Image (tube, rainbow, N blue to C red; front, side):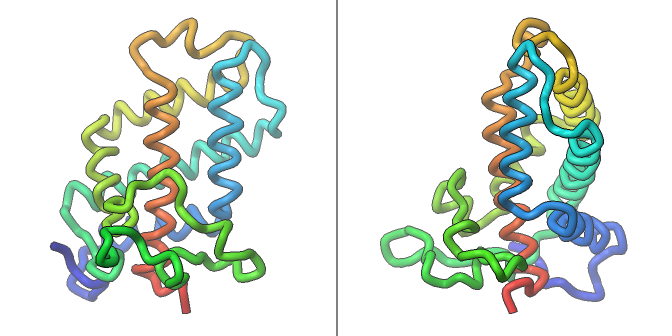
Length: 194
């Protein structure tokens, strides 16, 4: 199904996994989910976001890097086996095993890291969401979507009024899943749980 992190991975794939880690160097899981929600909510409102503009710009820059990394890993089918876990006998995730999802912010509580947007199958195999992201659009399409969302976060016009072909709810759900599975991949494949 995939490869363990190894010296035989190409430099580009190693860099893609490093980019995932760098996203969570910049944002905790909770911050990333909160900013995603608040920023996308502001794109649907006629009032611009009240989040610091430099924070919005940096969030979109790091989100773009995350998407680029995920698309690169997906295109190369460069999955790491240690990021994939088994479901229990009832086909449900074992949430008592904190090593599968508990991040590097150890002053937090495991409850804050439980993925809430994922199905059990996506929790077990985060690469399922990578495939969904790639199926939704290629790099140029995602770049366009992120640029539009970034712009509308600052406009006095609602994104819904101008972008009929883009479903903001679908984008939010997919990006929320992406952040959660990228965190799982980071925790599991980069030994963040030790």
